[in-house]
Amino acid sequence: MPHPLLRTGRLLALCCCAALANTAAVAGEALDVRIGYLDYRPDPGPLLSNVIPEPDDAGLRGAELAITDSNTTGRFLSHNYQLTARNSDSPERLLDDARALHNDGLRLFIVNAPDDSLRQLAEALPDSLLINAGSASDELRTTTCLANVLHTLPSRSMLADALGQFLAVRRWNRWLLISGPTPEDQAYAAAIRRAAKRFGHKIVLEKAWTFDNDQRRTAQAEMPLFTQADDYDVVVVADERGDFGEYVPYQTWLPRPVVGTQGMTPTGWHKTVETYGAAQLQKRFEALANRWMNDRDFAAWIGVRSIATAVTRLGNADPAAIRQLSLSESLPVDGFKGRKLTFRPWSGELRQPIPLVHPRGLVSNSPQEGFLHPTSELDTLGFDRPESQCRLSEQEL
Image 1 (tube, rainbow, N blue to C red):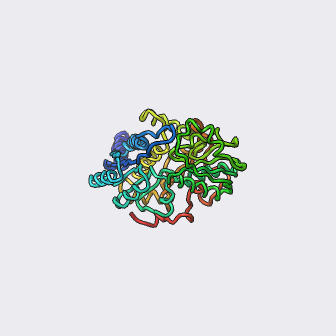
Image 2 (image 1 turned 90 degrees about the vertical axis):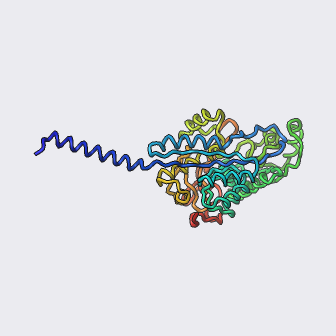
Image 3 (image 1 turned 180 degrees about the vertical axis):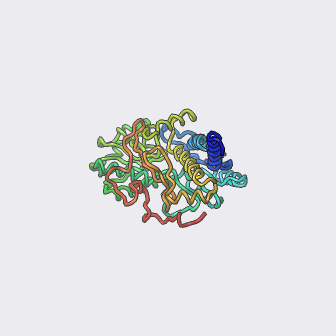
């Protein structure tokens, strides 16, 4: 009969072998996950103000940080994440760059581009998964339902609803709406009108900004007269490019707060977001990019992180499987916003709280307390299932 010490040694050896086998099973085979980053932003043309332009690398730096973060955790599973970026100077060049990466085997993409370019890419790459980190178009979440696209940048209606809820809580219900002439301004204004109707506000007057002069020297004289109207609680501005909106605060006929694209602004991300571990994300980003993280950086960052979270669960990088898992609502993603974030199965839009900020401070977060929903309060922001024609979870890639 073997000596007790010998039996103990054999048992330890068997346990060690089992542990090594389990570790190998968890780690699995090495997996290379290749992600493309596609960037195209049209030239906005000459601005009529001295607004600070968006960084040229907005979005890209967020994707790069997410690759670093994903490799930090992925190395324990032998998962290696790589980013291939293309910055294009025209829609045609963007499409050519995307096809070249596709021919090289890439099937996962983060896209920072206008909605027209995103539609072209979705049609040209039907077997790929695209994460929209650049277009806030409501149509992409309601009527133009792209089967191979998920959205991490909040839509204009999500932003407008976040604003509408806050103003309802404050009982600032009478709005003066000023909108610029560009299609983007008009789309933002349409989202504002929808939010006003949805949350019981009244737009007492709408005014279209038609001036083509720089307001730096004349705002003090022109803006009070332009904002003259019957009593209103707040001025809502729709000026995405920043031609005139920066000169509305403190120049209105009545002493009223300014909100919208200027003043207090709803946004997907801002420097002043610091709770729930966000301060650590901000510090890592600033060390990488030498600037603050903005909404497009965050949209690209969480786009890559959502892919990595799905790959960790699946053990592969198949775009159809990642899409199916993402739309199943069983894959929560940590976005440092105090809640686990999931994609809406009908539109593919990421549910997320929306910070309301001014340039140097956080004012609030929406959804506001008291705005209830049968399944998720986050679905009080933007288009809910009955309001959208999209049914992505019922389609296949």
